[in-house]
Length: 528
Image (cartoon, rainbow, N blue to C red; front, side, top):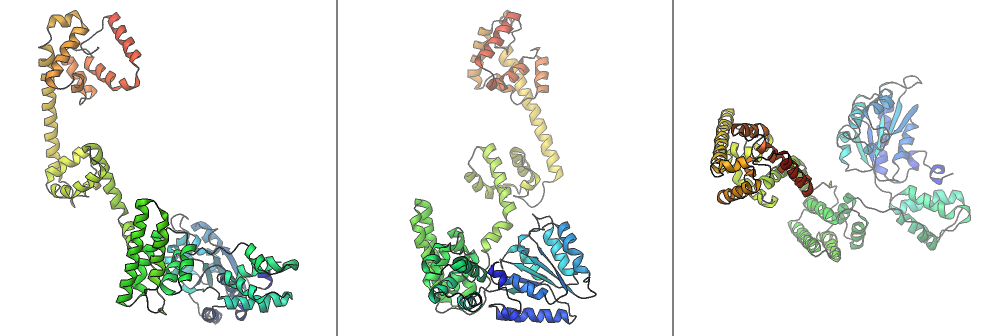
C-alpha cells in the first residue's frame, strides 16, 4: 500500500501547511452546512500541496460526493450529462447536500474542447450544491472566466521544515524506522514543497529494509524542479539570494528572451523606488545586449552573461524585499501583437501582391505603404492601384477608411474597357500593316515558311517585340475574331496555344508536328 494513501490526512488538523487557507475553507463548509449557499471553491496550487486531500476531507462533511477529472470530460455535452443534472438535484439521502469535486479544471479550453468552459461556467452559476474545483496553474488564461464565478484559494508549497516534521513524526514513527536526520532534511528540501513526492521517495528508499543514505538519495531521480515562467519572475523580483535566482533561471525551460520580457514587464509592478526601477532596467538592457550578440554571432556562451544580468542583476537592484502580493502579468507587447495579428496578416498579404505585381521585395513593399495611404485619398487613383494589384475590399480598407464610390468604380471600369478596345485596334493595325503590307502576297501564296520567318524577324527588329507576343493579352474569343477578320484560319490561336504549352513539349515533338503540317500542306503564317 502506498504511504501517501496510508497516511492521508483525515481532518483539517492533520493537513500540513496552508493554515490560513484551511481556516477559510472550514468557514465555507460551515456556511453550506448552515444552509447558506456559497460560491464554488477553486483551489489552485502546484502538485503535492494538499488540494485533493482537502477536497476529500470536505466530502466527509456531506452525505455524498461526485468526483471527476474535468480534463477528461471536456465537451459541453459530456460535462452537462455527467455533473450538470447532479448540480441541480439533492442527495438520494433526503434533502442533504452532496459535494461535486472537479479536478484539473485548467485542463479544458473553450475553443478546442467544444464548449467545455461554457458548460462549466453554466454549472457553477446554476448549481444548488457545493462545488470544489482544483487547478495547478494560478495564472492560466483558461481559468479567467472560472475565477470570476468562484472563491479562489491559492495553495502554497509546503515548507521543508513542515515536510521534515511530517515524515519524521507521522510516517517514520508509525513505520518504526530510524533514519539519518540530516539526510531526511535533505530529502525534505529536495521535494520543493511537494509533500506527496517526499513521501513517495522516502517509501521507495526505506521500505523492505532499505536505508536512507546520501548515496541512495543521490541515486534517485530528483523531483522535476522545472519552474514555470511565473515562478522564475517571482523568484527574481522577490528573492535577494543569487543562488536561488540562478537556480530558478536554470530550471526554467522557456526561451530566455521570453523570460527577460516577463521580468521587464513586471519590474515596475514590484519595485516602488525610482532608483531601483532604473537600476533594474539597466540590467535588462545589458541582458538584451548580450542576447543580441548571441543572435549575431551564434555563440550561445553569451547567454550566461545575459542570464546573470536579467536574473541576479535585477534581483540585487532592490534595497529590500517587498512584502506584498504582485500578480505576474504577461508583457503588453504580446497582447498588442495578439490584437494586431489580423492587421499584420493583411499587411503581409498586400505586400505579397505588390512583390508579385511590382517586382519589388517585401521589405521595399512595406516602405511604400505610407505613400499608398496618401495616394488612396484620391478615389480614381485608389481604384487604379487596387485594380492593378487585384486588391480585395478589406485590403483597400487598409489604406483608406471608406470604400471607393460605386460611381467612380463604374466610371473607371468604362474607361478601362475603352482603353482595351483602343489597344485591340492598335494591335489589329499592327498585324495588318506589319505583316500583310511588308510580306508580299505572292510569297504568302507560295507557302514558304523560311522566307516568312525571315520577314517576321525583320519586322520584330523594328517593333521590339515578337509577333507571337502581341497575342498574349487576348483571350481565345478575341484571337478567333482577329483570325477570322484577316482570314488567318486558326493561326494566331493555334500558335498561342502552342506557345503556352511549349514548356511541356520536347523539341522532338515540335519538329514532328512541323513536318506533319508540311506534308499535309497546312502551313499557315503562324505554324513555323
